[in-house]
Image 1 (cartoon, rainbow, N blue to C red):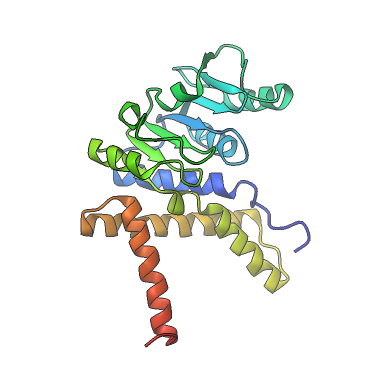
Image 2: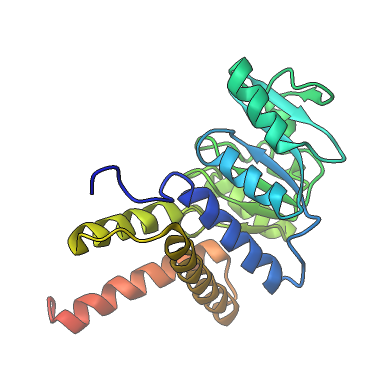
Length: 238
């Protein structure tokens, strides 16, 4: 496909939003009005922040390599994006409080979205995370030691292999469109992405409840089960 699929750039962030919406629904909470902190303001973080802001969330903190900013009443993400494009980062955004990179993760919020690099939530800071839910936008942002601490504290962690899979899902859509020699409309992409992400979350949620385990363990169980079932059905191994 020349030019690739429409919606691919936004796919990871959009998938995060779909998963978060379903997670909050299962927890008896609404997306609108949630206080959000996003670490990382690149392809994943900025898109996620923008989509959540448009749906009525209060994005109270964001950060990138230039620095981090905070406003307890919420940031105007459209203006933050314009500022970041002009200034090379979110640091120095007018009207917001400058905070440290470590402090950003520990800000008071409902949902923390680490969408930068690996190893950000560790044994050293997991006790100070104030979010009720961590949505992993980056790969491996939470260390195993921190994961255990968060679970003990009752913090819900939606793991990376589930939460940030929107990008690879739409890459699959791109491959399918190439096979068909046919472009899908963006509305088709987003509808199918939402269906897949919601269905995947529901399976993981059900597995976690059935086995009394974390969502991360449940996601890994589901992954192994599906691969094993595929091998069995195809008769690859006795």
